[in-house]
View: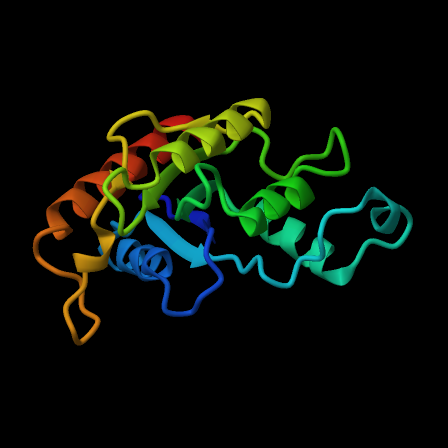
Amino acid sequence: MNKTYNVAVLVGSLRQASINRKLALALAELAPPSLQLKIVEIGELALYNEDIDQDNPPTAYNDFRSQLQAADALLFVTPEYNRSVPGVLKNAIDVGSRPYGKSAFSGKPGAVLSASPGAIGGFAANHHLRQSMVFLDVHMMQQPEAYLGGAGSFFEEDGRLGDGIRPFLQKFIDAYAAWVARHI
């Protein structure tokens, strides 16, 4: 019997037409049947504040945490802002990791793909995110590493994924499927 794993996908850009959102959707299409990828939206999360997270946390916090807890695995697809992860993604990580001792991330297999129109493909964001995930006990896939530079050229004018990047994305999502199966 083949198991299907639910994957919470966190996209570090809020733009509907962002390259990283398009890549997340492309990965969902390329994913083998063992993975069911679903983008978990992070744009409605108030900045993390322990004062509002006490007795009656915001509904958005609770909904977000519930979606993470229901997921078997995590996939981060993010650009790089100022040599780090975008603030909205860092905030989502803070919300999901609280209250202390009840992190919704803990023990799950994960992976990160960073993409940028620039040459280094979000290398710093990718590694900063990995540091946070190690602390949060997420078992991050190490290979293949995915720092995708020149990401503005990955899609055709009609929005379809280009043939040039497709083989790498297929390799990445297939390796991730094997990683998830091994770590659950």
